[in-house]
Length: 291
Length: 171
Image (cartoon, rainbow over all chains, first blue to last red; front, side):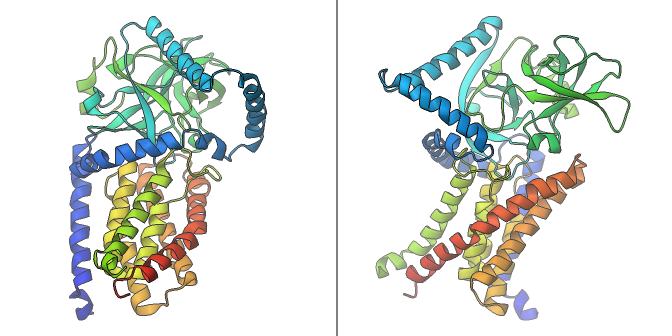
């Protein structure tokens, strides 16, 4: 035993473990900032991630084996589409897709002239994360700030929770740690959007703290309330699938099908500026709540 | 080949293998999700390196692999590195002093390591924060992820066997 404790490998193990514990404590203490190691590493890893993400842009659709029936149906549609498009330009589909994306973005911009976007691409996902957080290829150097909302053309997908110079980590709306004040656009009933382990697996989230006598029903659209200065008002979160009673109290919660799918989104927009941004940021930073 | 070996090409090959496994694992859409989960490739690579190179290399690659996993995650930075360092060290020790290095040992130690990290993730990242649906998370996310990674262990075992045999500094 004494010999074992004096081996070089054991001494190195102890040193490495101490360093890692210090790193963990430092990382926990710095909150949303990327630590030195992460920042340096992201400088090298981000271009590689960007490249691999680009190369697998189309492969991802093919290799998603979760829903073969949907893939088959999609395949049929695509075959039909391909036949029609053979006489068109080679990159017609790509141009159309981009055009559509920017049109939708323009439509959001027209509705909200105060919005300032930074377009970005998803370059990495934590394979072990239950809540489908992801990494984007824009960071502090592109004007992105901590807690900026992240959208797709369909709606809110998450917000920035860790910021580095050239990359940022996004916590999705499926996450149990997210809390977004939101309301039902039809009935104006308010609540808090937050994730749940069981729902996240199915790509769903929920709005909780709905009053017992509220009129929320399946098909209603849930949008952000805009309180707190983190998320602007009227960002679409998703559509109500069903309303259920809470197990712990007398309130209700509604299961939401998010408008933007955090599990598969690729092109996202970071909302770096909007009217009322950061209105209660200091309160949030001291309180630790997201909104 | 001898010159390449002297330049430490074996360690470069291991490092490259680890980095590629990391990129493969976290690039969206590259590896198919099975039961909605992805494998934890860096763990497989690090454990297999520890089996062939012993506890010292094991702990260093364990730390590196764990930090890579932490880089892509949103949880506490250093969490995976801490556990993977210890596990790879222990795996290396097992093979050096107690067990023969073969595919059965690889499956046993690899599965054990995956399971331990899976359980630690579950305990430290979810149970202590009192999330809802903890058991659902365990059997529908943690265990399938361990199973998926386990199936891929032989691939890395034989790949590392080739690296260890053909790029050995003793060759």
